[in-house]
Length: 475
Image 1 (tube, helix red, strand yellow):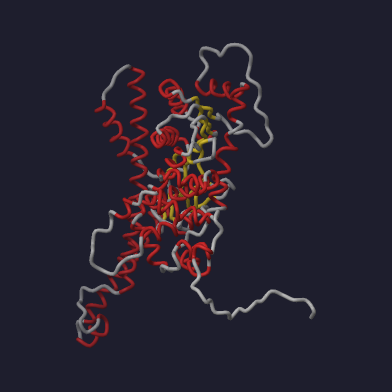
Image 2 (cartoon, helix red, strand yellow):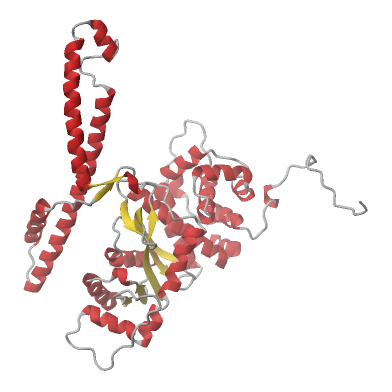
């Protein structure tokens, strides 16, 4: 061929050792994460956990935090996947300084410092506030169902638990009778006894089959106790609410009567036959997702600021309903930012008599004007215009809120809800691969959701300020 190509020798030996700093462009996300961990973030809660001087030196916490933040930001969350990336991905090798922690070290670090990693959420929010990215003029509160690290097929309803418990108790009684008969026969000769229980065995040892059933029975009884306790707690809270409202109407206050009513309701409470408990992750619940499918999940809540879609509050609940989270989430947002929002937008999932009253009280005390949908609209259905004239004096809180949303300012404000919060959930699900949680238990799920929220905020900061903004903050 007449054409001349550039020299290419795959077996060329490097004359000088390569520099990790030359492997990535200046504006790469990995460089932002490295500067963030080294210069800005407070790793004191992580470092404070290392008090033992003996033993083999562990990996530097900065290295591990770098890998976890970059992994959770780019959707590489599995400890095994992070280990592989440290070998075959340039950005991960850059962050790890060409080291390759094994997946056990990564998983142990994440579990050991779970609370400190969840605390990165408030640090990321404070960074966004210092950069002027959080205005708290208008926020949107919403929830999404995150799949738990457990199969719904590992759950069992209360009714089936009772039946299964009775069945296993009968099987245990049958096996115990068989064991007694075998023991009586085994006493005839030492040889038969040794063959049954082993040379060093005792006549009180249980066969493996009976042992397995007793362990299974213990798990079933624990699951049954959990469902019964939840039913009693729900009845207790409901009775307390009813008694307090009755006393409020009567103009009295008697906490002892409230406690008595709660105890009475808890004693009478009985779980519904379809109430379920999961053996893999007992804290998770069967929930209906946005596609209409029932999954083993947690309800992830988030408050999002309109200016740059920064998450100002993040939490996990085991209740499929969004309604109980209205007050707690807005309070958490105000505590994290030091400011109450001027407007709060919520969908119909939060609409309840208690929340409508709380919204009225919040506007009076904090100045937050709440726009809460009172019902769901069908696809392409338009909100009807507000009726003319004064609001009737006997209008309920729900009727007043519905009328408020039909006004031009109400329509204009509420139309922004989806544009504020829905893209945030979409970015976490797709860019960060956050549709399913890896950690089990309510505490683990909460910490992981807040770490995902922190990484979302850090991605927003990277897009907005980059390394220049971080350098200014560090100085």
